[in-house]
Image (cartoon, rainbow, N blue to C red; front, side, top):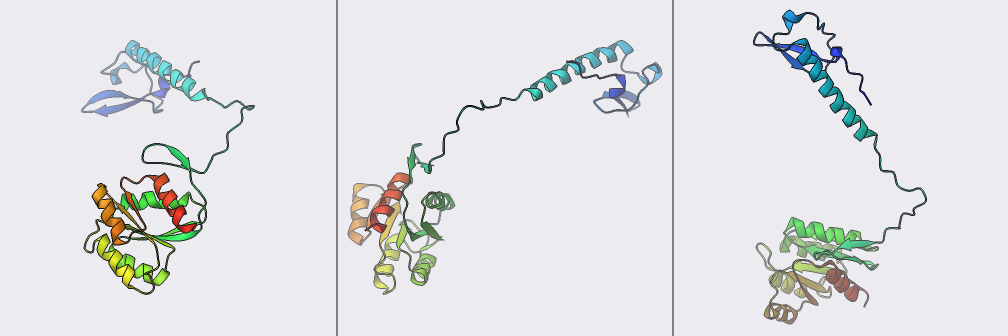
Length: 217
C-alpha cells in the first residue's frame, strides 16, 4: 500500500539563510527551483520522499489491523471480587451496616474505601485522627469502628479508652488495625478491649471476615 505522498507533501523552512526540509506539511513547493534547495538535490529529496512514504504506509497498515473478538465467544460475567494485598482475588460477603475508620494514612483510607465499595450493604465514615473519630462516633453511632493504633496526637489505645467511657459509644465494637504485629502487641490490644486485632499490611479477606463476624452477630 502506498500513501500517495508527492513532493507537494513537504514544507521548506528558511533557517539561518539556508533551506531545511520539514515534513509532512503541505506547502506546494516547486522542486524545479534548485536555487531554493541549498541543502538537498532533487535526487536526495525524492529518496527522502520514498523513505517517508514507506514509513507512512507501514504505520497505516498497523492502524488498519484490529484484533476483534470472536463473535461466538462468550464473555464471562464478572464476580464481585477485590485483590488482596497478597494478590489473591476473593469474593466479598454482603454485610449491612456502617463502619467508622479512623486512620491518618491516605493510602490505607483509600484501600478501606475500596473494600467497602465491594461489600454490598456496607458504608464507611472516614476520620483522619482520634479526636475527629471520637466526635464522629458520638454523632453518627456507627455499627463498628476500625481504629489505627499509631495515630498522630492521641493514640489508638487512648482513643479506645475514651470511646469506652462515653455513654453513646461504649457499646460500639472496635477493631484495631495496626502495623504492630508481634504476639505481645496483639495480646495487649485484646486485653485493652479491642474486639479484634488485625495487622498491616491490610489483608482484605481478613478485614471483610472480621467485619462480617462482628456485624452478623
